[in-house]
Image (tube, rainbow, N blue to C red; front, top):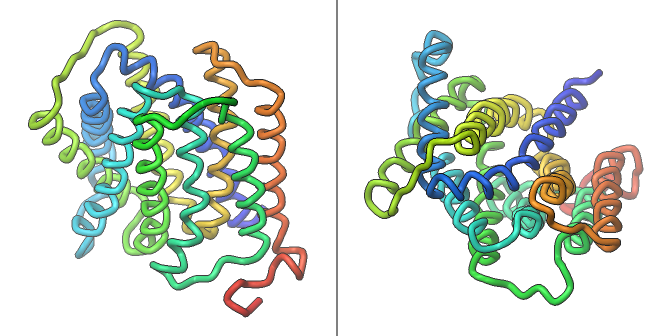
Length: 295
């Protein structure tokens, strides 16, 4: 197995965990306020890393705090927008709109990294976007404030993915993971104290949700993304991430009773087709051509 294949399979497993966060967060916010949920989640993650991995984290390289804090700011604001949006819109619709980051990553690559995507990647993204629309955009469903906030989240997550690609080689995966966790925790605690009317109900739902979100959907997935995303391209990574709404919609049906109709099934099939198109495009000369004019 090549390093690139291993990386992309790891990102696929991580995406499955992400898909579970949509119904879980929606349930969790019945018991924990949105920003407090982020604060607790990242504080626990930071303490865990300090207790068990501090010797591998310190000393931090020069510029690590600055670069990691900038990266974490995109992550934090994206999570805030997504969590608040989830209190207004459905979990499956939130997954669709978050998935729109596949539209933004290739554009941001051109702007930030001056790297032109390949034709097969772009074609795969277009198929994925159509699939995402069919998957979780119910007929007659109008945009609401929750959808708009989730759209902001999608843009910020796209910036996060591209900027992560820029700085991931400047420190170890554990160092970057720790800087992200502690910076996001600081942002969340400060925002909670200053702006949020907090609530927290201690029960099985809140504790179970926090355990899943902290150890699987935060520590494990952020480590995997930080460790393996640099071994593929941001566009290929984000197309893999686009499978997330398929998983989220399925789990939202099982847990929340949100219905996935025939168009949703067709959308899921198109998403998988788009992912395969992007993944296999390197072996097809026409699709492997760069839109920047080189192959």
